Image 1 (cartoon, helix red, strand yellow):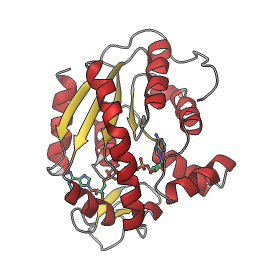
Image 2 (cartoon, rainbow, N blue to C red; image 1 turned 90 degrees about the horizontal axis):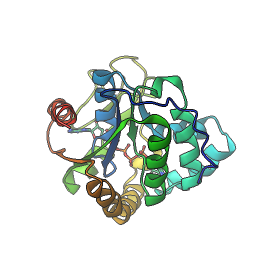
Image 3 (cartoon, protein in one colour; image 1 turned 30 degrees about the vertical axis):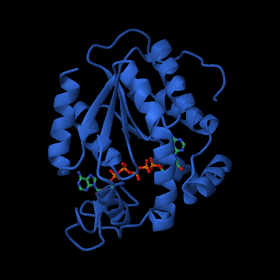
Image 4 (cartoon, rainbow, N blue to C red; image 1 turned 180 degrees about the vertical axis):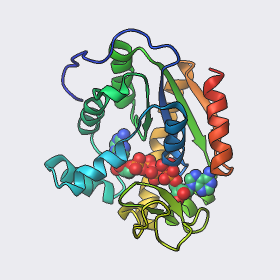
Length: 232
Ligand code: AP5
């Protein structure tokens, strides 16, 4: 775990401020939805996967450790992930709420973020669990392509760019993530299956869980998520 918390986050309740926690299997659409909801609610979307990949691109020591684990489909240590999340949440743009995409994934991470929110942020935690059929998940992951510049997410089968293999916004060639190979996908799904239940139980027991059927087009899914959040 990261070291002792220094409670430098904004103290005091911010009305209608949320800590949205996107849960769901790899490929469920957490990243796609986090970007849309972020724009709709004007709060930052914070992806631990993206931060770890950036650290690996920068070849920092933690980034290189994380890269080997990610490329094998495993989970990066709680200590490393919690410390990058805490650091990111102390940026001023998180003061009015934030979206966590891909965090927490273990009971240790869940306890860490509970404590951080309770002692520093005082925003309303809401976990959104996006469920998608396993068959669709594999298609979503093997077909995913991302823009290396702006991070836009496409799918060659389900949501192709206008010009094949080029970002609609940047015009740059799209990339396939190193962990979107079938053997690595199997490993990632295995880790997800092992870890999902305790996390879902944690948020269900706290009365903070919203279940969302992710087997529908992205736009419809965004509307359903926003409706559910606003009804909390
Ligand atoms: P991370 O980057 O978080 O990957 P993930 O959880 O496996 O999730 P994905 O990003 O693969 O999928 P997604 O649900 O965001 O789907 P997306 O919207 O892209 O983590 C990567 C690795 O980092 C982990 O394996 C681990 O090693 C490490 N890591 C990260 N966080 C960690 C943590 N907290 N602790 C320890 N280790 C950690 O969509 C997928 C595809 O589907 C796209 O092509 C998209 O266009 C398409 N799509 C999306 N929505 C729809 C829809 N509604 N209909 C049709 N297609 C859709």
